[in-house]
Image (cartoon, rainbow, N blue to C red; front, side, top):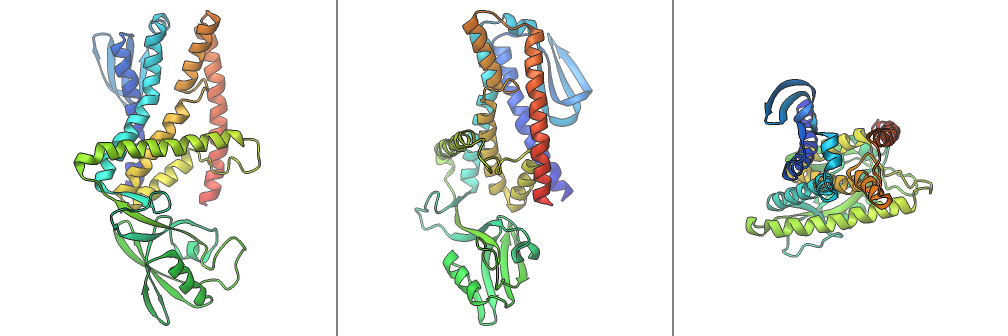
Length: 350
């Protein structure tokens, strides 16, 4: 379990490092003075100065950072500053594209409702969510588990569809059944008793199911498939953000938000399901970060661009002191929001 967590943590840290690497490359391209490019965060373990830049390895593996001289940045043309900052937004989109391209060769898990299979791919009935304190949750079933078969007193039945599974469960309420589950590469068995009485929006087992399949692509077609998935998921993420802000003050509108704790939790779940699920999750997370980073909030790259546009309109630059105060205030606000959401994440997980 600890090894899995460390691998997940380092994978997410790598996303952040690559994001900073794009800032660094564009800063060098436009000849801004880069004081330091660091892997991880201080305290510094090792550093070597090459020309004007210190290249460092640091103790805390939380991604990386680029330290650009503020005066050099302020004196650079608008175009140069724009591309150095926008490189951060673009980086997450490119990373997402590469992950989807690689994963299309390994095999991307897809819902038949989202994209119906075209080549007679094998379909699975998968668990996409579990109700709290339900028989399924108490038995130890998890999101992403694939249901292979169900054993009752009448025999063992291979599961071909959701309707078939639901029918068998309904016929065996109050009776012990055994589920054969595929979790990642492991086959597991769980015994549980479907409830005879249950909440209105739940079923006897307390499961939400989806029919999925694994779509594989030849390597030579992978770049195109990666681009297609990137645009499809980008559209869904943009729509999600749009409706989130449209309904931001409505009750329950932010229930789907997760903080750092929830993000790590879901990352760990997808990692346990197997490489294709984890890469797909990382790809979607990268795209989501790309759009979040584009928001006009001063702590994001989009926010920095927004401040630059205000400067251009008013034809007067903010002082370094003023800019630091604006960014600092919003950073503090973001920390508070992240803390509140993380508390809710912990309550959900527990």
